[in-house]
Length: 305
Image (cartoon, rainbow, N blue to C red):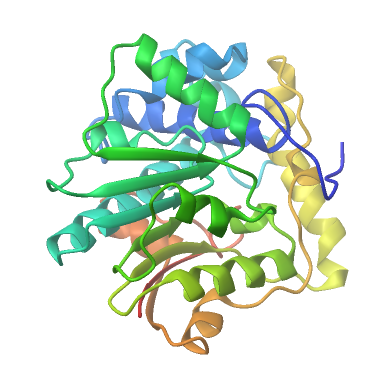
């Protein structure tokens, strides 16, 4: 089903299912040898969502080899590598921000992210997680049921990013006068181009000097490329359908002409550095992607104000 301006979701439907897919990839990456990341909560969270396809991946009962091949532009094994590298990038970003003395952090569209439970946070740090109310409620309840305790002063903000989330964040105790470390991981592709601009404007307005931002930038798409891009995305999931999972991810994203994240931030007072997906894969000891493989064109931006 195509996206609408007021659509909502849980972790088994629509955009929420992509968070579960990424968590399944993190569970796969955690089992890898050698492991680039360690996320002990990924597998049990995926199990709790109840999508059997992803649960089998998280448990290791369904292997990447069984899903790879054919005409798919990127296989599950490479997807898991990409998600491992992406996760490590944002983990490292938070570690560097903490080392620099930043004690306020925000995760936008946190999904099944468990960084508040698995990362080491300096004393005095406050971490805010923003996501849809059903997503926040599910993750909080599930982790509590597992006996997991946050390792930081974790404050959840249950609100859609299309609503007045800055007001909700401030009401939860956020201090706009304090330097903040923000991450926008796996988010911009699910926002229309103008929504991406608006979100970056809102982050900039809330960011005191010394704040940092890490974001995943997706490439702009010319109108002529949209049909081909959606067809490639559908092809990526063809083998998944053979195993009983059928969500059209191409209907969940917004393509079209969008701003380059690096340039946009520079124009709004941020200094930036950027790395490609291949830069991260090489950094963390994994195989490079071919130029035409799925997310090879994605960039990872670090910025400081």
